[in-house]
Image (cartoon, rainbow, N blue to C red; front, side):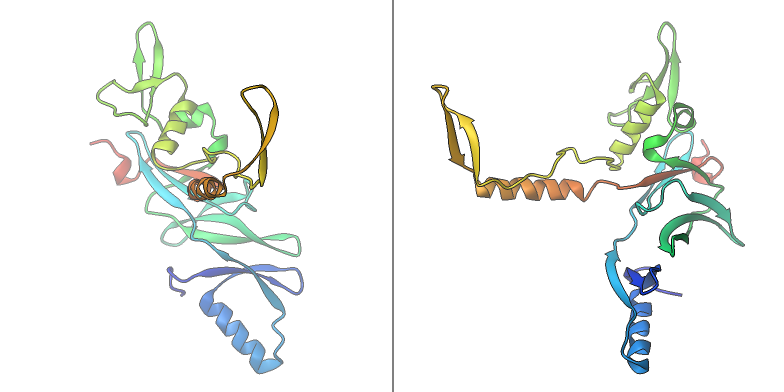
Length: 238
């Protein structure tokens, strides 16, 4: 069994198969190839960054959010093992056919709700807190503000409440700084007399803006999926 802290790599074999291997496995493959004929027969495509994941507790449920590879497009499922449940997801391809990875889930009975960006109003209603107010109707929690008793029930839709829950817990679906800054040597402006002028761009400011954009981009989840458990000890109300 490999060390969970060990780096993993995506490699492409000569027959168009893609495979995920650990550093130890990669070294063993290289050693075997050198001992045989020196022909590797594969190339390292990229290092696979650790999968983002976070567990969030509400009064109704415990939710687990995992950031799956972008190649995974609603082809994931929860499967039962001998002692625990696993999230089975599409992680690579072999000759056009998907390879799957099995990720061990925490104790409990888990349901895969789907992509965070595609959860329905009905699904979010089973997760987020709500109260009914006479003359107003049902209001849902805003998790980005402090909530005391009924204070904080400011959302009219469960999906809006769900978005605030994700945001409050650092699950960013898009970069708030939007597009990556572009380097331009000159920029067009208009002077006080209404004449067009070309001015040299501030290179130092561009580098500052680029650094801020990259820092924000690292916090963006590329393909987050939501799993929900209603029967774990942690999710039961006292």
